[in-house]
Length: 600
Image (cartoon, rainbow, N blue to C red):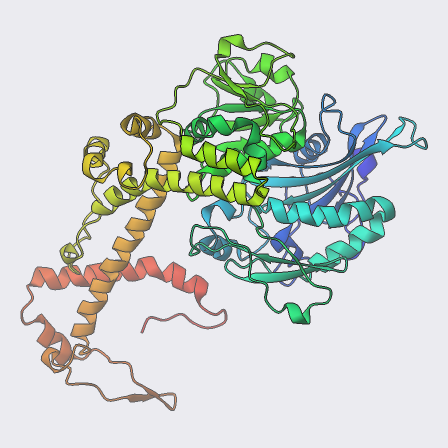
């Protein structure tokens, strides 16, 4: 493969280059470097072709100074082509997710932390994985020895914007396959002019004569999804192509063959159970896996997931070993070989070719794992799991009625997404309420004492609280909610949720304690008014300018100390020093370079 890629020197911006030399690192970039805006959206663009001698081969990587390890190159090559069993002819779009082989690396883009703090958890940048968005073309071509033109255009990103990047590929790929390198170079230069993704804002993204208008969701948005507001369209010629979402798939189309088992699948995903999805093609596989992982919103999906996975993947042995329990992963595959290899997995979903006729397709049946066969396994959900909650028959009736009335698929998807959202919220709200009750009262936080600790989470206490504050208050579904919570406590999703909430509460507690200390110092400095001995303060000149900040005086301090014991005074001083030492590194990072950081 490397023979095809070449090992030439780095080229200047604007030149389409090969993948460059082998390296496990990444070329150093600064915020002012070329491609800084490009890297806010994409890591790189790859072209993978089929070579008679090498098989799948990486034809080029753009920008050419982006460095991929040999493992990453190999993974991209194999994951960018459908499995030979798929028999995909024409154009096919799908996606994959792969691990960064060098471990977690420093991001190029300096706004990662800023972006992630404002984006919903489901849309934050991946710290240790790449998403690959693929446009694959396979058509007959007599000029090629093998008789077929086979090539994939791949967008590699750490952003889970599947709808946006699929739309982008629909514009770019057909043109690229006709005009090749010059077209790709122009498109990448256009992306390098885009504004950075900003949660809560509607952005106009010009590419190839089309303006794509998108809105990046924000963490403070309401849970219900809505299309972006079409703003400033009178100034845009031609009219923009508005995407209703950057990430949401057609959920109804993905779940059409498994609607009767959506609730069971939701429980399996919630509990972080190992789940194998065997589909006839990578597009069906990747969409089903992404649909399953989106079921838990607004809860963060804390397990691993691979929308499309092959036997050539570097993690094949890790996922297929029988020496330990199956990993917590949702795995999408197309090769029937996986049924034999992963027969020990507890849950396998086999879906057939999608049928988009007017009627609801035949629903897959719930089958026991013992009925699994190799190669000729029929569609079905093979599991011994029994759902804790009863099926929502009213939802199924509404969706079936929508099919009969030819209701638009996006409306059907909105119904299904709303049901799953309300189900997840009903499950999480009691946990949130109980967690909030573990927070110490604000009146117990004093400046001269160590802040009180967050009380430990007691599973038994929480389960007892469900009798009067459980999910039955917001959800009509009946079933064994207690059993579901007990299994949830053992899942990666509970661990991830608890760690995040505990971290947020600890930060809040730290802020309240610092506020109490500042209030005490304010009183000591005469900021509290005449009763503190301050009697107001007179602005003093500093560098020719009036400084209105109150300042400590001996009289202020002596007045404040009158009703305080020596222990309280010493504790306050020590606590203040501890807080300042803890805050200084963060203040130094935010301080302007070239100036001295001094405490007032």
